[in-house]
Image 1 (spheres, rainbow, N blue to C red):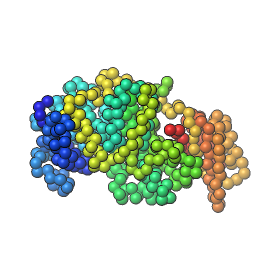
Image 2: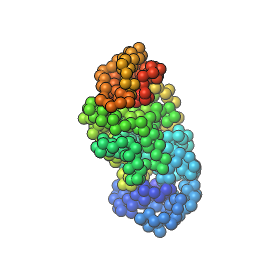
Image 3: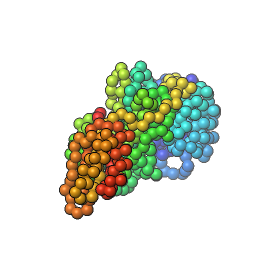
Length: 428
């Protein structure tokens, strides 16, 4: 490589502007650390005249990101537009075919098209780097592909959506219902344009699917992930969890089992004293477990201009240094199509339901659980005035299939007024 690395940046939102600021502010440091001068040749965005708080006068402008991606004076195409298809995918493919390396923050694109893009990149002798796509400023992709390359990874686990963590911790600290905190988060600009990407677990699921591919040498399999969002959680769930020494987190877990690859993103109860249980606000945390290293915990900001731009620039600097690693840590042709496995690892579960306030109702529920092989560890019925009777049950360890059989049978008892909420208790 010559003494200069020239970037083309598509997408000038918060992250794109942050990248420009770092390159301007830290030019001398970046050259000292990489041995080359990192510059910007051209940029692209949907709106040219928008005030972004940073001057673009020194860069060429391209209305078409595909044209930007194929310019002769661009060595690395930096894709910060977002979206699983459309201009982001088209421009990324064009860049690779034109012999450019790619740095992206686009977890949705890689979760859907990761295998095909990895194969294209490797066929062209190019790399795709995507640290900013997972957990913001936390260098978790680098940890898996480099620092832990000598480990057989046994489990990947973490809180990977800062918005959901903000909502859950705010509900607990302020004693507010979900709907009120959801609206508060929306007013603060924390939610995606489609809020279901956040609160439905989709955004975090995209991230987990990428980490699972790296960790277990499998093709990205987002479609096989078990997804459950936080929309059904109530302040009563938050308080009940706290009473038992737990906090509720939208937790992602991936592990390779004897039956296949288990991937799930769902609300879980975690011990209040654990690192995950102590996580507050919009912070992210990823826990990696390997057969040699045992367990490491990575914690940091999961979004924002500085942290995400920091991750983008880490990838740019690695390319400038000549570090070239396959997209998912090993050649795309060696990645296997994993057999999807449902959550077979036994766990205790928290159940919340409302029963008809009449004799024998609780006994019918206990009988249904027992017939499905689900043992009750503890049970609590809350004081109430009129209407249904709120009931909380914590089971002993069981598998989800048995629990689902019991939950289905409860619907037929005639005593359950509301569909039970079931939350896994994850010992971490």
